[in-house]
Length: 466
Image (cartoon, rainbow, N blue to C red; front, side, top):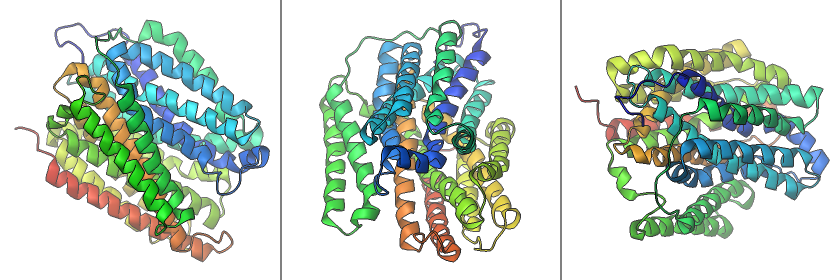
């Protein structure tokens, strides 16, 4: 956190540009691979069942290592960890693009995820260092940071189609390299010096929670193939949950834990993180299946499908930057989180009514704009609340926790809604009616998660003191 008595950093808005670019890039890397997957499969010999691991290897490494990234930011300094993360991301991107076999590709994607797990919490820590003690500027800074996420998600789809069509699949990975080099060149002079503090790193705890989260996500991701009623699914899920329980026990007993469990006593921290988890579990499946509906049912090409998502992205960015900070200042975070998640649920319910012979203007655009309004209203106040911990030295930990909540919610929500879609007909790529029925079920499931998030926020978040 910044010192209220210190003068403002003169290049703080330039630094914020790099911080927003970090958010843009780590989210883009989760989506840019989608359009290129058929080319990757053909080039590297992935089976249809294993192809999803090109996506999952990144998400699991990213989500599993975020807590460690937050702890390292607190101990080593956020600026140093931020730069290290970009270097790791560049190496992983080079490796993924140069891969000649499937296993090398997955290693490259996992290294990319590890780099992003260092970048994301360090970026949020730097944001709070620059703006945390400037209440008039902090909402705008968080809004700009938040708007970079949907922009990165849509840009990934858009650029993935463009690059795959006019260059090669390798460039969906290599595009990160010049970006990383530019950020590394600018970081020393732009980012504030964020000194670390003394302390040890709980490597056993980091390994336990990373493995536990990865195994839990693995169980949900593999459940559609193995079967939700199979012993394999439940044994793997039980193993993942057991590892997470062991991690919590370790944190209780450790003198310097990876996650100080007392941080959860911070006002609204648990409620804000629950809101972020359920928001991501609803939003990411909505975005994923909306893209499939546009391509597989309405028949849009990859480039056109990415372009069709631009109105939703533009609306989110505009509302996050212009509308959300003003509403937070007037009403406080809680009403916006509850209202936003309810609007997100309503938008996804509307999308569930999409028709096999529908159109973008009728079946997609109005519902997606309502969902965009909900996301814009809920994301910024829940994120800001999750970061508002009393102890400034735990800013990296708070950043790691909220990023972990969002990424784990994304992975689990997408895996669960993929199973829902498959169980309700979204298997036959030649039958638009069956696909639409499956996608509608996924939209309804995601709407239920968003509505659950609204209810949970209503019950757990405390209103702002008057």
